Amino acid sequence: MAAWTFNSYFRVFALSTKDCKPLISSRKFEDSRGLIGQIRSCSINSDGTKIGIIYNNLLNGVASASNKFAIFDGESDSFISQELETDHIPVAFFWDKKDKRFFG
Image (tube, rainbow, N blue to C red; front, top):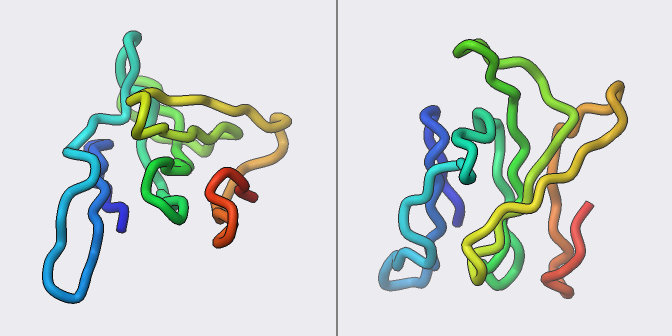
């Protein structure tokens, strides 16, 4: 399970019938330059190692729709950012249930 806050923090949990264990501790959606954006939604792959993040751009504290999305790799603790054409705005992120590497 992936959870995120309005302040652009996210966390990943492994759920079982008995407990809920953190897989990735609380992480801010930022890189070496600072905050990447404001998280709109997250989607986690089948083994909990990657998170697809759809986000808004932030300019002077104001959020606006972005044509970008990011993938957080929990194993390398890094973000990979992807940009779509300017008139394409991502609205949903889905991972393949059989192969943890594929998304759409």
